Length: 232
Image (cartoon, rainbow, N blue to C red; front, side, top):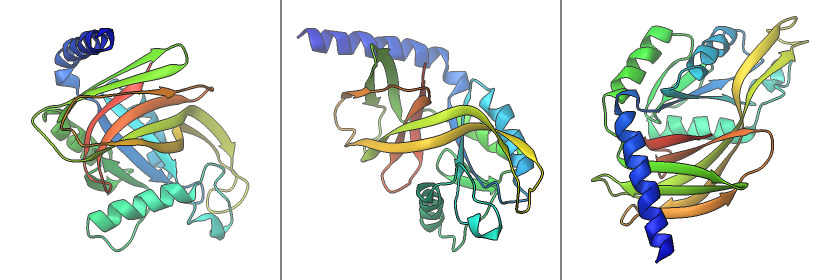
């Protein structure tokens, strides 16, 4: 019984916070980038500006498919390349590119086109979340609570870990000689669960280490992002 009461209290707190922040809905922007891509530094710099915004969850996902041209990206991961290719498949695109930004799991845009990126962010901020999401840190654990808002489809509950910033001295390749500072570098994306959205959702997850984290609710199969929350 107490567990049910605590769940209700936390969800009510989430409702208040969500109502207060409706005008500043948290929009997820994923930048697919590479240290071996000469067109990427302007997009990497733009990601810093997005990362400073309270209404945007900006994430840098370094891919590995440019490593062969002279410099191995120290943050590159095959998992990030696979995620980008999955987005391309869902969107009916045959190829991937860098720098590419995916906004709220739906639209793709060249990452160094800030005007278009900001237009898409504003567009999504005018839309209501399809789920209420509350994340509470409790003694090394995360308590995740969610409730559907008139929408029912299986969604993946994702735990995203990232480094706030890091500097790399690039010694070879297209960006040889540059010292580039990167923002919100994704180190891991973990699927915690698949939620059917038919009833309120609650779970706990261990969280430790120096990295920051966020929870994302994304339609299964790399579909649209329904809601997101930073872990404070």
